[in-house]
Each structure stands twice: as structure tokens, then as C-alpha cells.
Image (cartoon, rainbow over all chains, first blue to last red; front, side, top):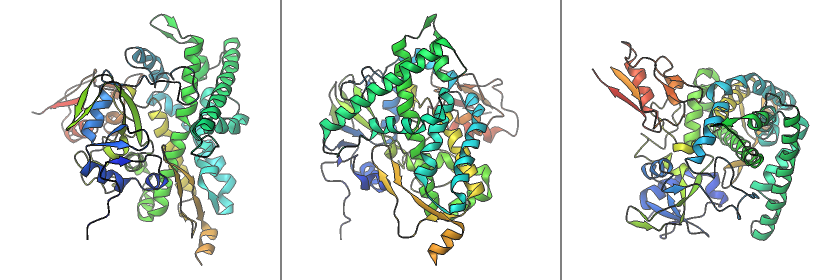
Length: 405
Length: 64
């Protein structure tokens, strides 16, 4: 009997399918085997999956541009900086942003993140159960972001609402006009919020990121007000959901794989390497888009200038051409050049911050709640695009024992 | 053994100095710097580990 294919003969993949989001690796395997260039459903954009093709595209912004049309996207009036800007302008922004988001600076936030993580654990530990997203994975990156930006923690719920208003507007998936309008309205609220913050920081600068941006000098020039706004807008969209998604995917994996989890509990020093492997295996940001600037050929497929292409980071990260034993999750993998944070000049600006947050979160959670499981009878539910676990009910301690009995 | 980093290729992933801090250091943008290209005896495997984990292929090694 022939194995059933997950992908039709057209090589078409629906990136917004929730089944794909829940378990993408078998789909990646089939794409890698059968289609060097696939296509995305609905839009029909070419889809690159092989590690060698994806890293080539990421490293060549002169061919694969990030300068997207902004009218359709994410409620913005202008490109988000530096994500939607190409070198050399992008390089200038990264000079000052890389310093502020460096590995060393990320370590300064370790104590604050550890404190937040423990406060969130305090709130649920006695209960013996929680929905991991609401209890931990959503608030922790939001609190980190608020600390970094020097914003009041009372704005936690407002921030969650604003980013969700852009990333997953509360309208039916088929209502494209409704989604567009909701994003546009939310975008205006985000601009208005940061306009006010910029005014406050100009009047009374602190050591937060907004103050840094209002005073930063690149090659002798200050950033314009629009530039500061367009950077803040990106931080709100890029800095919260991605860490939430990675925490959720990682803990869903560790809940379902107790032997792997127990290794981390017994050997906390293994956490940084385990995070790299979980980033590779889960690759929560499954795909990034680019516009090709010239006619190119990938394999035997021609792609015309002006075409939007998707780079499937998730598939590249399980490509057997790059990774030995790619479908085994190995916390001691010796060579792991995963692309979960992208690569080339747009390498995720927040990657050092994200790694610190993930490390602190997994260390503290497993120190205090080493044994946990997905609540019996429950199945985690994933949202597509950024693979966020929208429903991850966990049980532990006496509650875990009671529910098992 | 000598190790070098191509600054034009390094994008600041930070994998090298996380895995082999004895050899690879970070600048203020988390890009790789190598204060001494001569790898001390006994640290050859660490140098190779740093090279093997650079997503940009920015690190090269001269054996011998």
C-alpha cells in the first residue's frame, strides 16, 4: 500500500492549517523529499525548504528583499524598522540596535526575568494545574518587554490586546476585510501609544529602550520621530509572540517527552543546548517572506523578479542534508546551525534576549515544577503562522496524581 | 592550529562564544572577535565546535 501523501502533487502547502501548525515535521520531510520549490496555498508564493536554498536567500538581501509593500500588512503606515528595510539602510539601524540587544546586555535582564518567572509560578504552583500560555508563556515575555521599554506593568493586558489585534484579529478567518480593518484600527492605537511614550521620554529620559532610541546617533544623525515609532512598532509585534510561542512549543514537547524533560531537571547545565535543539525542532517562526529583485532559478523552477517567496525556516531546520539524524531530538547535538532566528543581515535582533528568557524560564520552571504532564484527555492546540500553543493545560503534583487515578 | 573569523560574514548569532568562550569573544554588538588566532594545545576540539555551529560559515581553521 502506498503511503498517503500529506502534500498534493502540486506541491501546495497551506501554512495556515492548524494541523500543520500542531505537527509540521512530517510535512517538512515530505516537502524536502518531493518538492525543492513548493507553493503556498491561496497566495501561490514559491516556497523554499532546503537548508542550502534558505540560507542562500537569507544571506542575499540584494536578491531577496525584505522591503515589503506595507499597505496590506500588520496595520502599519510605513515599513517596520529594521525588519522591512534592506541594507545599506538596514545596516545603519542595526549598528545601534545590535549594541542595545547584545548578548552582554541581555544578561543584565536575567535577574528581573527570573523574578517575574517566579512570581508567575508562585501564582499557580499550589493549584497543581494551569493553562501554560495564560499562566506563564504569555505574561513572561510581556513583562520582560515592559521592563525593557520602561513601561508600567499595569499595561500588560493592553499590550497583549494590541499585539493580538495585529497578529490574530478577533474576526472569522474568512473575513479578510474585517481583519484588515481591525489591524488598521489597532495599528493607529499602537502609534498613538508610542507617540505619548516618546513625548514622555523626550521630557524625562531614562535608561529604557525608548529613551535610548530618542537620543541615539547614527553616523552623526539622530533618528526621526517616525523612525523611533517604526522601531517600537516592530518590537511590540516581534518581541512578545515569538518568545511566547517558543516557550509553549518547548514545554509542550517536554510535557510529552518525560525522559528528555528529566534529563534537563537532572542536568540544568544542559538547558542552553536543549534550547538550541528545541528551537531547531520546533522552529516556531516557521516562515519568513522576501520579494525577489531579479529573475532567479532554483532547481528547475524559474522565479520572476517581483515575486513574493516564502522561506520555510522550519523545513530547513529538519533538512537531512544539513543535520545528522535530523528527525531525532538530541540535546547534545554537536553541530546545530539552525535557522530558527533566521540568518544573514536580518538575523533576529532579539535572539540574545530570547535565549536568555528561554533559559531562565526553563531553569526556573523545572527547578520548581520538575514533574508535570499534559492534563489527561486534553490535546494542545496550536495556532498557525507563528506556532503558538493556544491551549496547553498542564497538571503536576497531587493534582497530576489525582487526575491519573 | 590557527582560527580566524570573517567579519564580513559574521552576523552576531553568538554561537561560537557561547560554546567555546576560551577562544571566541564578543564585541559590543555580539559579533565574534578572536584575540589570539593561535589555538592553545588541548582546545582544538573547542575551536572546531565553534566553527561547526556558526550558521554563517564565518569561522575557518588552519590545521597544523
